[in-house]
Length: 216
Ligand code: TYD
Image (tube, rainbow, N blue to C red; front, top):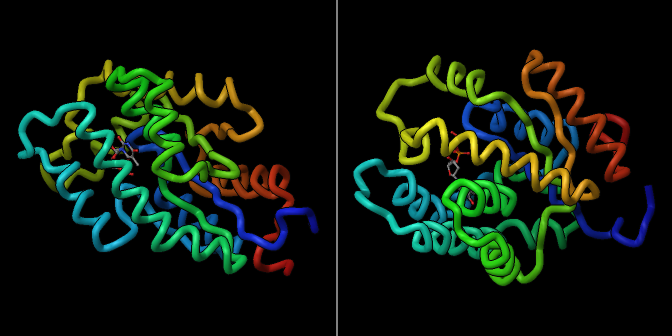
């Protein structure tokens, strides 16, 4: 679909709480669209090191603002090193978590002022928000059960958070999606992997007007 933005790739963020199946869906969507796939926090050598610091359950008390700024430091590097060059080269990018996670986790979850979180995300990304955020919504119970099924190690710093924290994150995502429907697509994540994947692909194609790799 030729539009004014057709010359640059589109940035699609896959969002959701723990155990929503984001990583599988991000990989599947990227392969269907012939897009690059990457993740946050991480995506670059520096970002992956910051990720280890952020997830480390042995990090002790991490101040909420410190957590926010580390997320954003990793994002600024990711954008400069990987995301922006790919978009400029005309490739679509699917990112497993982006600024929507920061609004949900550091804003709604931790309780940092949402206007500040939004403003700092904007600054760290020079105004680069996702063209579409796909929220894979599952209940806290389903997310926890799925996560429980794949535990082979100590829970990370976020997985170890309380049910109340994860509930604030989930409600926060739903609030963000409802307040900006142009940039959010909410998909029910409780179906099979294949059902969720087709709902995401159909929604992304409809909303962004982009073809899948097979039909190009
Ligand atoms: P991820 O590996 O996607 O967790 P999972 O796939 O197990 O859900 O992300 C790591 C954690 O980082 C996740 O718990 C959410 C958190 N996070 C934030 O709190 N803020 C952010 O801006 C980002 C990108 C992630």
